[in-house]
Image 1 (cartoon, rainbow over the protein chains, first blue to last red):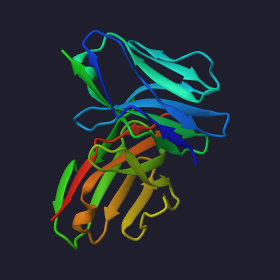
Image 2 (cartoon, one colour; image 1 turned 45 degrees about the vertical axis):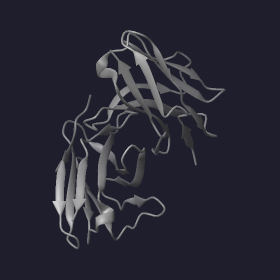
Image 3 (cartoon, rainbow over the protein chains, first blue to last red; image 1 turned 135 degrees about the horizontal axis):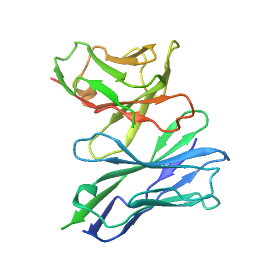
Image 4 (cartoon, rainbow over the protein chains, first blue to last red; image 1 turned 180 degrees about the vertical axis):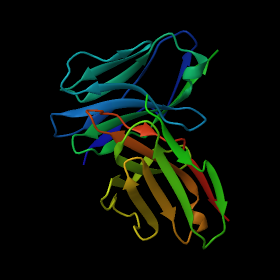
Length: 113
Length: 116
């Protein structure tokens, strides 16, 4: 079974600064999808960014970008110009072609004003 | 993004009773729906995966007779917690994935179940 590891249970960042959240995964598949989801205090899971494994180019969505290293099975999330509203729990997720989603244990991000 | 509506957001029930949670995809057809359980400050634990018109596939350790899942249409899946006990109290989240090449899943707002 695929496993997703987030080694940083908690992170903090100063407002307007940049922070990087780490994620590694284990798989024997060559085609898959990776995601970062955000869960604010409301507990509504929100998609932040996604990456298709077959694409070499790193995905970017406004202030959010990823560093996808397929060979190293690493998928980190960079948040630039951090805002107070970015404070949340962030989950890295892997989706196999077989439709199963696997989530990491999450990183709690605090944004310091 | 697509919208998934989960209802109710909070429910309190007495021990021994059953409670039903609905998950609807409002603007897309959900070929697959997932049900998760989340304990405080923990990750999402997949309970089961359901495809429209077929029986749900339950994860190991999840009692299928206790957590009944029905995915009767492409826009609705329900989770019924039968004979609820206090240890069933938790946060339950559904997510839905559509077809047409959509890779991501969209999540409902979650349901806080408290069994007293």
